[in-house]
Image 1 (tube, rainbow, N blue to C red):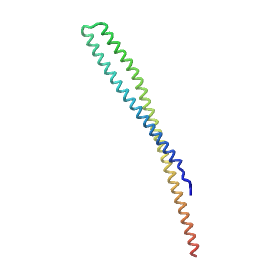
Image 2 (image 1 turned 90 degrees about the vertical axis):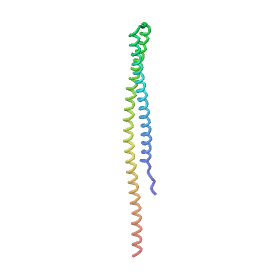
Image 3 (image 1 turned 135 degrees about the vertical axis):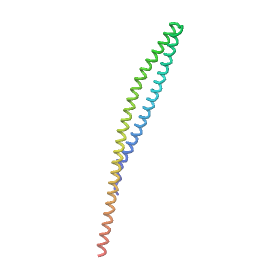
Image 4 (image 1 turned 120 degrees about the vertical axis):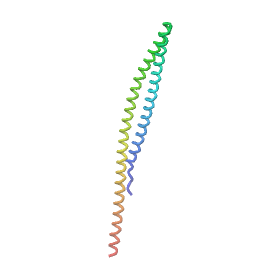
Length: 147
């Protein structure tokens, strides 16, 4: 009896685990990008609100302290927004890299699946040939005994 070779099946399973891990990385990176985009929208909203407040303060009677506080807060929010935008760029790059890695690992998994199928087909073909040889030998032996 021939020893069954599971090498390709094992490699295919390993490739499937790596693809699943890469997909988890893609989802995590996507969530990060989504969260940062939400934060960016909130920052834009805050800047808009405080610019409106600044315009209201400047249009009426106001103290210089109120005006300076509003301007400083807007400047602070814009600094935070600039850091957030840098983080967002990095997160988008990470997402793109994760998607690329997932595509490459998926291609590797497909290759392993094809090789596993080919090995299974070859094994079945070999088994069929051995069975046919056994039947042929039996038929020859019966023919020789019948003479």
